[in-house]
Image 1 (cartoon, rainbow, N blue to C red):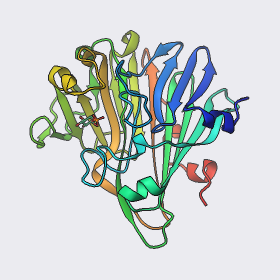
Image 2 (cartoon, rainbow, N blue to C red):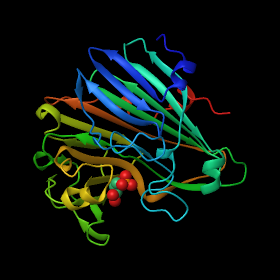
Image 3 (cartoon, helix red, strand yellow):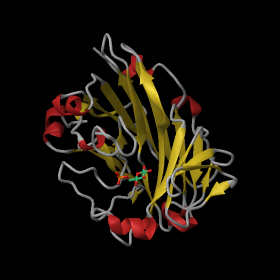
Image 4 (tube, protein in one colour):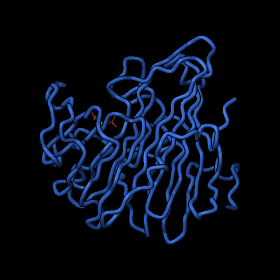
Length: 308
Ligand code: BG6
C-alpha cells in the first residue's frame, strides 16, 4: 500500500482497507481498534460520548488492557497500554491472499516506568480478512535480571441491536467471579448466557471459542482465542451507564463486551522470554468453521516479529 509509516505516524489513525468496504481503523492512542467494518457494516460499538483527547481511554472498540486488569494501586484502572500512544511498526500491507496486515508496538518509556518499573516490548499484529479480524500479540521481557507479572485483555465492545437478544456460548460449567455480587464465585449452569441486567463477570478457564448470536444484522460472531484463559462479560446497564461520563445513558442495549484475557492468574514473564496470545473475530451467517491453524500456537514470533 502507498501509505508510508511516516505519513501514518503523523496522524493518530491507521486504516486497513481490504476492499469491498471492509476496513479496520486503529487509533494509535492505546492501539485501540475503533472500527471494524465488514461490507460497510460496523461490527464494533463506540460510544457517541467517547473521548478522543489522547488522554482518556477510548470508550468502545477494542481497548488493549495491560499490564493490569481492573483497579490498580500503582496506576490507572486497566493499566497504561490503553492510554499510551503506540508506535506503528509496520504500516498496512497487502498480503498475497488479499488480506491486509499492520503491526503496532509499545515499549517501556519514562511514563510507563514511572508507574511500573519494568522493561517490556509488546508487538500487536492485526490482520484484516474478508469477514475476520486477527489479533496476534507478543510480549517480550528484555531484562537480564527481572521477571514481571501482568494481566492482558482485549476489551472487545461488540455492536448489537439489542443486548437482551444476544446469546453467548462456551460458558457452561465455567466458574466465574461476579463483580456485581462482591466478587462471589459461582458456576455457570446455562448452555447459553444471556444479559438482562448489570453484568460484570470474569469466567475462568473458558474454552477457545465463544459464539455470540444476534450481533449486527442478526448475524453471529465467533470469538476464537489462544492463550487467553479468561472471558469477561460486561454490560453496565442503566444505573452504571449514568455514572460514566463518556457513555450515553441510552447506549447500553447496543453493546456487549466479550473480553478475552489473562485476568485471574497473571502471566509471569522471566527475563529474556516472550509470551504470545491471539484472538480471531469472525462474523458469520451460517455454520462455518475457522481454519484452526491460523490461531494455533505457531512460531509467529520468529516469522513476523523481530526483537532486539
Ligand atoms: C470491564 C470490567 O472489563 O471493564 C468492569 O470487568 C469495568 O468492572 C469495565 O467497569 C469498564 O472499565 P472502564 O475502566 O473502561 O470504565
